Amino acid sequence: MATTPFDITVRGGRIATDREELRADIGIRGGVICAIEDKLPAGLQDIDAAGRWVLPGGIDSHVHIEQLSGMGKMSADDFYSGTVSAAFGGTTTIIPFAAQHRGKRIPEVVADYAQRAREKAVIDYGFHLILANPDEEALGHELPQAIRDGITSVKVYMTYDPLKLDDYQLLDVLALAGREGALVMVHAENHDMIRWIAQRLLARGHTAPKFHAVAHDALAESEAGHRAIALSRLIDVPVLLVHVAGAETVELVRSAQRLGSKVYAESCPQYLFLTADDIDAPGMEGAKFCCSPPPRDPRSQEAVWAGLKDGTLGLYSSDHAPYRFDASGKLPRGDATTFKEMANGVPGIELRMPLLFSEGVMGGRLTINEFVAVTATNHARMYGLAHCKGNLAVGLDADLALWNPEREVTVGTAMLHDAVGYTPYEGKRLRGWPELVMSRGRVVVRDNALQVARGSGRYIPRRSPDAVLPPAGTAPASRLPAMLGLQGKAWPTL
Ligand code: DUC
Ligand code: ZN
Ligand code: ZN
Image (cartoon, rainbow, N blue to C red):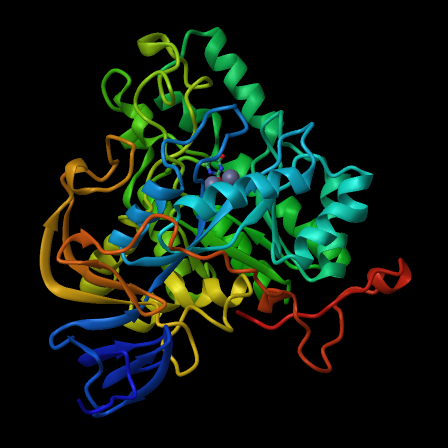
C-alpha cells in the first residue's frame, strides 16, 4: 500500500480563518494540521468537504459546567453532557469555571473540577477560576500557583452576596493579575441597585419572572461596568467585562477603548436573540429566559450586533448556565418561586454558533471572518490558547468543523444534547449547521452521532492571554503602577 503523509485529508472545502478565505485541502497528522494547500495527497482517511465551509472549531470561553452556582444550585450539565452538547454545535474547546465558594481553598477547588472533567469531557478544556475569597493565602500563594498551572484567568463578581468583592478587593485581584500575567473577567452589576429595587418589588408582591429584568436594570450593569473599567485604568491592568447586555455598556466599552484603555468585552446569544419581553411570558414560563444580566430591548440587541461587528465586543460566548425547569433549578418552590429564588442562567452551549452562523453569516450581518474571530480566534488569543487552538494554520491542533450552509434546522429541545430539558430558542429556524466536528484530528461528531469516548478530551494548561503580554516598547498609560511598585505590563489590541 502506498504511504501517505496524512492521517486525514480534508478535501476541497471553503476554508475561513479570522482573516482569510480560501479553497484548499487540509492535511492532518498526529492530531495537528501539517499542510494547507491547493491539492494534497490522499490521507489514510479522506473527508469530502465540497460545498462546506471548513471553520476552526469554536472555543466557548464562558460556560458553567457541573458547577455549584453562587446560590448553591448545581448546573444540569456535567462534563459529559456539557462537552457532548458543545461538540454537536461546532465547539471543540470550552473554558468552564472552577468555582471557589467561601470556605474552600483554591487548590482543592481546582483539583475537584479537574478530576470530574478528566473522567467525562469529550473535547478539550481549560479552566477559569471564580475567586470568592481573595484572602492573604489566596493572593499570596494559591492564585499565583493556579496561574502558573495554566489557569490564566480569574472571574470576579461585583454582585451576589456569596461571591461579591468590594472595590478594594477588585484592585487587589487586578494588581495580582497584572503582575502574574492573568486576565480578570468581571461580572459587572451594581449589587445595591439590584437589591434595593428587588426588595421594593417583592414588598409590592411583584414576584413573577419578568421582574428579574426590572431589578437588574441596565444602569446597574453600566454603572458597575464603568467602575470596573475605572479600577482597571487606575492601575493600568486589563479587564474583561463578560456577558455585556445593554446598549449603554457597549458604548461605555467602546469609548474606553477609544481612550486607549485595556478593556475587553464579551457578549452572548441571549443578548442578540432574546429580549425582556421573552421573560414576560405567562405563568412561570419566563423563568426559562432569566439570566444575569437579563436580555434587554431591541436597541440593546442592535448595539450588541454592532459591537461584535466593529470589534468592541471581541468575544461571543454562550454563558451556558444550564438549570432545569423544575425544583432542582428554576423553580425551587414550584409556581410560588419568586424571581429572586430562581437559578440564574440560560443554556446555549450547543446553539451558540448555529444561531450566529444563521443570523450573522447567512443573514449578512457578519462576514465569515468576523464569525470565526468572535467564536474562536479571539478566544484563543484572549485566553492564552493561540499556540494550539482557535484557527486553521499549520502547527495548530486539527480542531475544525464542516458547516453545511444549506442545511435548514428548526430548533427543538429533543435535538439538543444537553441535560436541561428546554431551550430558550425553541422553534427558531436556522440556516447552516456543523455536520462534522473534529478535535485534535479525532472526528467527534459525524452523521449526527458522537464518535468518541467519554473522558477523551484533554486539559489544556493555558499561557498568558495576549491581552496581558506587553508588546515591545509600549509605555504604561498610568504612572501609578510605577509609584506603587506594581509590575505593570502593556497590551496589544485584540
Ligand atoms: N453570571 C454568569 O456569568 N452566568 C450565569 C449567571 C450569572 O450571574
Ligand atoms: Zn456572571
Ligand atoms: Zn456565566
